[in-house]
Length: 214
Image (cartoon, rainbow, N blue to C red):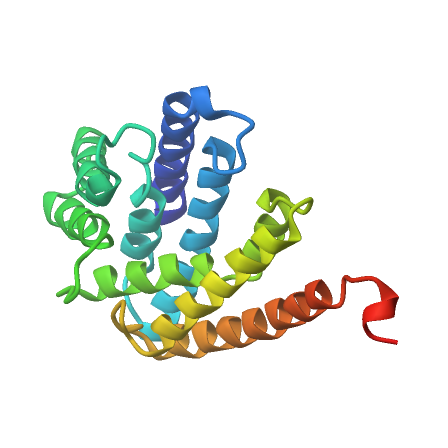
């Protein structure tokens, strides 16, 4: 079995596992369909970053496919990296992946949640890839889908809170981006968010009766 077939095998497992364990959340904005699509985008970023870093493409893409596989079965979301790593290790050993390969992938999966000093390139790439999708342009669409547009003050408060969160990211309060490509892209995304959400805030402020400004 070549690399593409092994990746396809893992992809099918991760998809089916998320769909089955998340079936009670079907139709929700953050349900299994979204979680799988997020996984695919993270895998794509992992592929890009692995090429840039001259890292093992197969390990990085497979780690990305497994990283949130336990999303709907983890009792404590803060520990979903550990649970996903257990699922990944079990599956890979059962289907014949070498033990050292499975261990490298599982460590990256485990450490993508809360690990402030990941010790392998796979772990660093997975953290960056996950962060990049968290701030990708698609999230702007998701915000529009989930926002309560009937309550502009609430939308305003949520945007202001998110912009404050972006400032914390820029100050490095949640840890660094580990790859140069990751750093460049997340800066680009943050600048887009600031521009788009800044304009939305301006439009909300201008949603008022004309006698107040003519």
